[in-house]
Image (cartoon, rainbow, N blue to C red; front, side, top):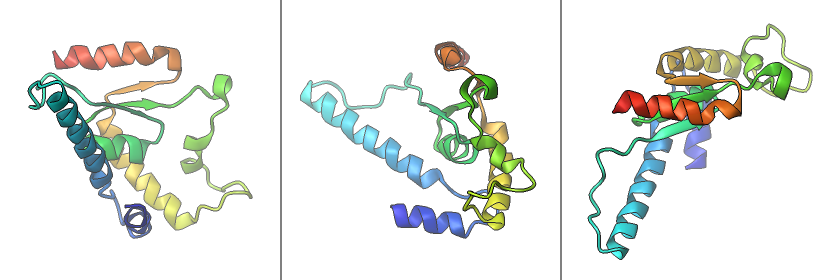
Length: 143
């Protein structure tokens, strides 16, 4: 799993197919749900009303990858002033900090992946206190 993941990231030319890693997580969930239902002697069929909402801070990997597997997405871009998070800015810089080990080629590939994932964002939040509201908005859209 991990070798395939990092090998794939090193050879992408655009929007990487990250769907497989989220498909694996979804498959594992389905196995566990089925086993739990069997233990309770319930129906192991999937509930059609269940919605997978993936919350993450990485546009390409969290949003792009999970959306390809059918998830609704919430991108967490924490407020710079309050949280001092700067990770997303590494793709906006013309020169990387001296401590960065990311190659220019990898940065360019990630920019392309980020652009491809932009239209797959269902909600974007800057403050974690807004997460329950964002989840409710996604759920309301589905009902």
